[in-house]
Length: 274
Ligand SMILES: Cc1cc2nc3c(=O)[nH]c(=O)nc-3n(C[C@H](O)[C@H](O)[C@H](O)COP(=O)(O)OP(=O)(O)OC[C@H]3O[C@@H](n4cnc5c(N)ncnc54)[C@H](O)[C@@H]3O)c2cc1C
Image (tube, rainbow, N blue to C red):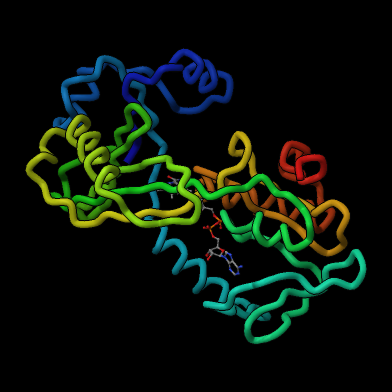
C-alpha cells in the first residue's frame, strides 16, 4: 500500500538516509497526501511517502511458515510444550527440559521472544530482554476506505485488503501482563480519529495486546552464547521482529554454519552484551 509518514520530527535525517541508501522515500506536498488519502485528518502539515512499504497479516504469515516447515523433511514441531530449562554436560548444552521429557539437540537456539531472559537465567546469565506490552485496535470499514498506510506521532493506521483498519500501538512496561485496558482503548481511538476522522463513526471490532521482546536500543541478540557450547540466541527484536526476521535468520544461519555473513555480525553478537 505504501506509507505516508506525517509531521516526522527527523524528516531531514530520513531523507538524507534515503538519498544515501537509494531508497524510494520522498517528501511530498501535504495536499498530495490528501489527494491520495482523502480520509486523512486535517491536522498535519508535512508528509513523506515511502512507496514500497508493504504490510503482512502476521497470523497468516505464521500459518504459512508452519505449513512450509512441515513440508520439509526432518522437521518436527512440538506445540504447547513449555521449555523449563536446559540440559547440560559441563559447558555444553545438549538439550531442553519439557513437561513431556528431554529433547536433545546438537545445537539449541533460544528464540523465546520476551521470555528469553527468563530461560537464560536458569544458566545464571543476565540477558537484557524484557517484555514491552503493545495494544492495538481494529476497525472494519469499506474495502477502499484507506488506500495507504498512514503514520503520525508514533501511531499508525494499516489497511488490510478486506477493509479492516489496524491502529497501533502502545508502549507499556507492565511485565508479562497482556490484559487490554480501557485507557489504551481510549488513547488508540483518539489517535485513530486524529489520523482518520471518519473512524469516529466506525465500530471497534478488535482490541488486544502483545509482548515485544525489548532489548537495549532494540538491537537483537544473534549468535552464540558466550561460555557455553551448543547454545545460540536469536531474540530481542523489540518493535521490528517481523521486518527483521528474514535478515536476522539469514545472518544467524551464516554465523552458525561458519559461512560468509550477509552483514557484519559484530553489533548483534551476544559476546560482551550479556
Ligand atoms: C502491538 C505490537 C505491534 C508490533 N508491530 C510490529 C511491526 O509492525 N513490525 C514488526 O516487525 N514487528 C512488530 N512487532 C514486534 C514483533 O511482534 C516482535 O518483534 C516479534 O514477534 C518477535 O519475534 P520472536 O519470535 O522473537 O518472539 P515471539 O513472537 O514473542 O515468539 C516467542 C515464542 O516463544 C514462545 N515461548 C516463550 N517462552 C517459551 C518457553 N519457555 N518454552 C516454549 N516456548 C516459549 C512464546 O510462546 C512465543 O510463541 C509488534 C509487536 C506488538 C506487541
